[in-house]
Every structure is written in structure tokens, then in C-alpha cells.
Length: 463
Ligand code: UD1
Ligand code: CA
Image (cartoon, rainbow, N blue to C red; front, side, top):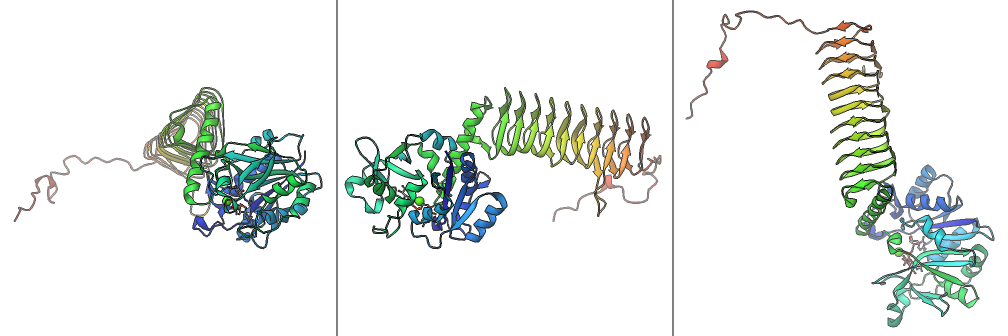
């Protein structure tokens, strides 16, 4: 089956109280329309977005992030039937047209694809609500085909009691939909061209329209900030369930946020308030501590990320120990068996196998060999005010605490740097470099001093 997906996104969304078009509001780090288009693209690459209100911002966003989608312009928001009509010229005769909504972001591709069959040419997706207020009510015949949808404004008191409502999502053969849309008028309480009228007109013209009831959580819309927050919760729960299904141990399903894609091997565990963005890949037996942020990170088997670590665009090997309070920035590679401790920041840096930077360091544009120890307070001075320069440290070397390595500079294998050194020249293999002020002791100095002896200072008396 070939699908043409029409995404309605022309409405204003006044109840959001913002200047941003509604479909560009954020949900889990992406905008609402991004979620819809990601789902849509799992079904078909042929997608038309109907734009109208604030169309420039929306078109900019689409051309930047979804450059294969087509946009069509609905000049006036005179109803959902008119909006769908605007997208129809992009359909082929026998395409199945799927209508989605830019502000209904949680619908899953599998829900649509599992719902429909090839026996019918038309489907509507429905849901059961305890409180159906505001939605179009679904009326069915004795064979369970839909005969019509009655909008809230047009419903009688009896019809208002029907709990099965239209989600807005519809699938219909293109040529049939075209014929039916041509017959829709705006003779109703809202004076709008209702998409839902195609159901009634279809039934009258012998089109069998199959209702498919789905989980209401997937079609929660975002009309207000309160609904947006509710979506965030539903989304978080959905993603947390995915983690559990992968076999990951979670300390609390309500306190883990997956805003990107996570994949994991066996026996991984995630503590509270972890945030995952971009693409995160965990090996086997990886443990993520509390309050950790991981964005575009790969972590090997048996590695442990401790509390409050912030890790972006980084690759971590196996058997590593990171944090607490480590900050690994873009372009960091931590090789197997290495350790990065608290208050260590890295950027564009490789830390070799079995090496350690256990406390308080800045390692930028650095290449550090294996089994090397970076002492507390080590700084790679990588920036000269104009350019970034690199620091190289060989294997099995030792950088004493509080040393500055002024780049560009190279320290060889098995080399030592004395504590407190400012290293400006290369250090060869096996050498010890000390570059600090020499200590001078002056015996008896304080006794010979004529100045005030601080130990005898008395505080002024209270008045
Ligand atoms: C629609 C359905 C209703 C269903 C409900 C589910 C119709 C007539 N009614 O009602 O049966 O229960 O969705 O949420 O379809 N839009 C445009 N152009 C327009 C009008 C709307 O792009 O001219 C877009 C809006 O931006 C919005 C979506 O279509 O995202 C739905 O429109 P809205 O007016 O909110 O329809 P509902 O009253 O919610
Ligand atoms: Ca709506």
C-alpha cells in the first residue's frame, strides 16, 4: 500500500498563549510536529504538511529539519475538510491518504499499521472516553461500520452520551476521499467544512468505513500548556516502559527522561533523574547513577557513570568509571579501564586505556596514552587567545598535581612532571620535568623581623 500522509498544522492554537506556532511547541526536547513527522516517516516518505497560521516560521523549521516533506498552504482556516483538500493534489489516485495532526504527537506508526487491513478502503481511528465532551461522537450501523460523526456543537443530548469519539485520524483511498470532500459543505453550527462529514456522505454512497478503537493516550492533543505537560508525562512513561522492556532496571519509572533513542545490552541499570538525549548506546552491565545527563554517548560493558555527570558526544569504553560530577564534552574518547573522577572536564580529548584523571582537571584538545596518571589540578592550556593547540602525553606517564601543560606540547612515554610545574617545552621519554619556583628556606627569619608579629595581635575592645 502506498500512503500519502497529510498533516494538518494550519491552526493558530490561541489557548497556548505564546507567539510560537502551536506545532512548534516543545515536547521531550523536540517540537510537536517533529514527533508527528518522525512517526509519519515510518509509514511513508510521501508527506504533505498543511500550513497556514505563522506559516513562515513553520516552513523554515520544516525545510531545516524535514527537507523531504511537502508543504501546502491553506489560506483560511475554514475547517478540517478544507485543510485536507488543500493537501489532496499531492495524492495519486490509489494512494491511501492518512490524515494526522501536527498537535497530536504521540500516535505510533504501529497503531496505524496494525489497525488497518486490505479488505477496506476507509478507516477512522476512534477512542472510548469517560468524558467525551468536545469530541465528535461516532455513530455505527449494526455491522459496526461508521455511519456518521456528530460534532459536539451539533449533537443532541442523547448523542452527547456516546463515549466512542473520533480521534481525528483517518485513512481513506485517495479517489474516494476526493469525491467525498467535494460534497462537504459548511451548513452546521460552526459554519466550518467538517472533515467528519465525509463519514456520513461516504456511508450514503456505500463506502464501508471501519472504526478502529485505539489507546486514548496516543491521541492526547496539545491545546494548552497544561495538556503539553500532560503529554510530557505520557511520553516519559511510554519511553520508560520501552526501557523496562529492553530489560533495563529502573529505580523509578517516573524519574527517567528519554528524549532521544536509547539502546542497551543486558543487565543495565538507571538511577533516578537520568536524562537521555540524541542517541545513547549502552553495552552490558552498564550502571547510570542519579542525575546524569547523557547526549549522544556510547558506553561499553561494565562501565559505571556516577551521580551528576554531564556527558555529551562522547565514547566510553568498557570497565570505565566516570564521575561523580564529571563533565565530558564533545569529542571525548575514554578508552577501556580508564577512570575520570569528580570535577574533571574534557573536550576533544582521548584518555588512553587504564589511564586516570581522578580529580579536578581540564583536559582539552589532548591525546593521553595508556596507563598514564593525570594529577589533580592538571590543566591543558589549549587556547592561546587565538588558536586551539594540542597536548600529547605518552603512555605510563605521570603528571604531578597542579601542573599546567602549555600547548602545543608533548610529553613522552614513562615521563614525569613534578607537581606545580608549568610545562612549556616538550618532555622526552623517561625524563622528569620540574618547572616551578625553587623553594628557599631562611632559618630564623621571623624572629629577626621588626614588623608586627601577627600572633600577638589583640582585637579592639568592645565599647
Ligand atoms: C476534530 C474533529 C472531531 C474530533 C477531534 C479530535 C472535525 C470537524 N472534527 O475536532 O470529530 O473528535 O478533531 O481532536 O474534524 N486545522 C487546520 N485547518 C482548519 C481547521 C483545523 O489545519 O481549517 C487543524 C488545526 O490546527 C488542528 C486540527 O486541524 O490541529 C483539528 O482542528 P480543530 O478545529 O481543533 O478540530 P476539533 O474541533 O478538535
Ligand atoms: Ca482540537
